[in-house]
Length: 215
Image (cartoon, rainbow, N blue to C red; front, top):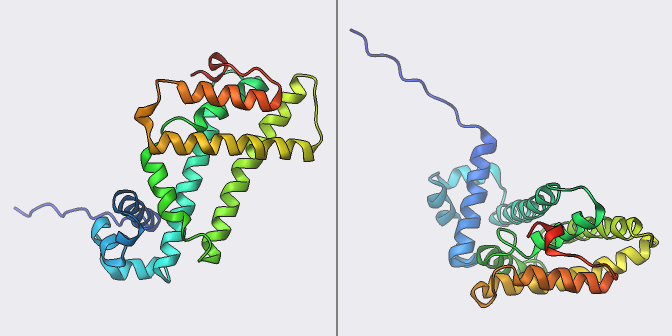
């Protein structure tokens, strides 16, 4: 009796590329950027070093792709959570504040990755461009929600003022995000969310509540 022929499935090239990116992120999160050598990334992903060279010209290209992947995932997580729940402009803004300072966006692993990448931003022009795009994407999203919430409250502001308010609010949220990632056990359940809502609300002259944020 002839044995049945084994079916082989060629792995999607995008899946192989993603595996390399995720391997780099895992190494950086656990052991820092110095641990993300070509050999270590290949071992982490379970592939040969030659496969890395097939997808990325240099290790720096791979690390930049990993940074893009991580930052895009962070922003998409925020956008996805903001879209859930009631569609009022103030409620959406409150959810953006809450999700920006809560896991999985604000967490030790996310902070570890940010710290691992940030020192490369001023050394590598490509990494700097990725950082700029990521920052502007988040800030523009925050600006849009701020403008909508103020308009809903009958206090429409010009784009330049909405931009200024977004920069100020982003600075507050960045600080809380850092604290949430560096020392999460120092804060009570929902404490940073409440602080974020109160602080952003004070800057904007709006009352943002935990109930509106779904927190």
